[in-house]
Picture 1 (cartoon, rainbow, N blue to C red):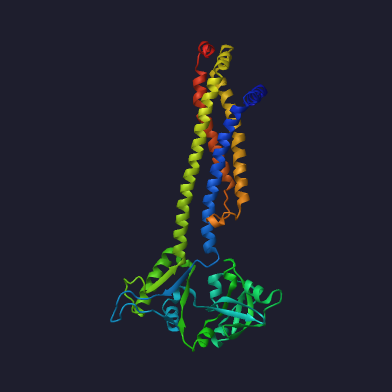
Picture 2: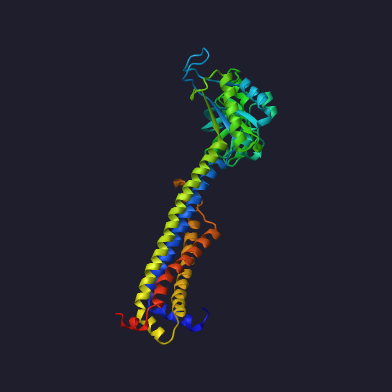
Length: 409
């Protein structure tokens, strides 16, 4: 294999048969390139699902009241369900061992003004623990605390883009903004990995919102975080118990799908991860098909190569070449071309994935990539199976008798 004469002969053969060499190499390089790109796209799909859930906590339930569609215990259908502070207190009391934290949400939107600047923004009236549910990152000042909730303070935590829109380059901390006719003091500025829309929100104490709205105790939604040690099975059991508890408390028929909604982020995440893995398997199967196509291409080209060199092989055998040396000469050339072409295709594929980055995010493919070990493994597999595919025609050629080979036209 390391004979200088053998390598000299291989390079001379490649030089004389440029088209054949190009076709062999192109088949291998294209097969690996397609495999790398498709497999990288599969990983990009998984990254998209991870990013979708990554900017919020995943051990969270979101509770939404609905409108009943079935009568139950004397209550008619088409009844609007409402949450209040008592519901939140009862949940905290009855499910304390399972809860990490809880917080209500009240959504409103309206005109927000500061001096001559104004714009419409969404306001979320929440509790202090909502910071953990949204993974809010404080840039300046502080977030809402329990004292703010207790004292119903008119404090606001604004998003980075709200500050940019209303205050420009000036600091907002300590300034007052008009939120739908009420003055609120800015105590903090946050950023959120969820994107620009998240950073155009304003957080205020939910008790303050209730005070402004005729001092009621109504809640739009309730957010609960279960303890991570519960695991997926524990979270599903907790959801079932919570669902039963609230339906009994609010007199909602157990079979009524519209009276109460619970969004289990952990369950959604698992389902989406499973879906992404299935997609990746499908993509990997298609990508593996390109490797098979590459192997078949190598085999077909090797059949052509052996046929083209029949007379040459006959002369070699007439001069005393053994079948083993004939097979070795053909396979060494094939393996050399396959290896070089395979790694070129792999590097081009990795380069294409690296250049894409976030460009395909609109198509649900985020930062497509492939593990270098996986790419090298696929390339080595193609080289090995390519060598085996070439071995069959090479072995057939080694069995040809010199006199028969010399008569070949």
